[in-house]
Image (cartoon, rainbow, N blue to C red; front, side, top):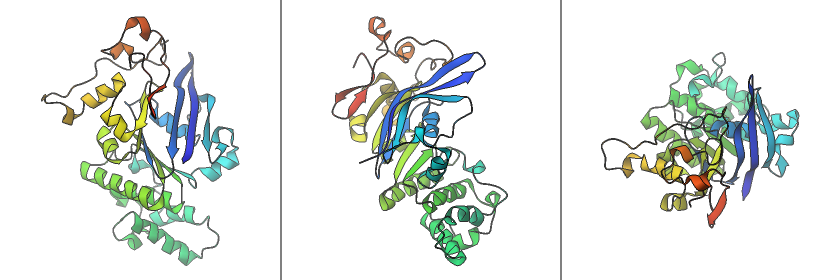
Length: 317
């Protein structure tokens, strides 16, 4: 069942020298109780797509068209009051950097209470017990004593667990996890992803996972969308994606994985993504594509269904 549906989202940035498009006809859906991974290089538009869902965008960002449907409501047409009721309580965000995501002036308990206090039926003692309960759910050691300490007293992994606990306390249906393991060491990364997966299964929570790590995607995602230069270039269920990768960019990402090369030197993708402040004609990946045919790649390919539920944007597929 679709819980969130992004349809033909277009976003531009207003700069001193003009207005430049950043997202182009982005469409993806998030099913109830699943992890949908949005994959791509830094700067390709993953975070802007995620922030569009809760309309927390830079002041110079302009959504020019599209729909973001959540529970039969278009978020893009929601009032500020409606958005405040959605953010945090219905759709929660786990940002990239846990080190700077908690308020350094408030204890962990006070920051959790800000969310739990919305339930007016609870007494103060019950609220405190609820704080301990959600910290136990995210496996934070000694949760009772952690309520009275400040963020700087916690490690990066512990801070990330607190942020996840805040999402659980709000009973959010959707968690946007924006590179949730980037600032953490490898061991803690695995623990955080395992925790998110357990939350998905236990609470039937839907998770939009923003990442560039195909290793994480292969282990935890249910569905995958690959983004390049502001466009979705491939979308498929996980098994179909890894067994039948179609888009040249997706293939190049797969080829760069250590497990997929016998060479001592990892394969890379030659060239750079296009400059969004310059006019781009045709397929955005064509300057870096080994299969590019100049006679057809000067036209912009549309996202088409090549096999059941497997969509790709490429003239050569």
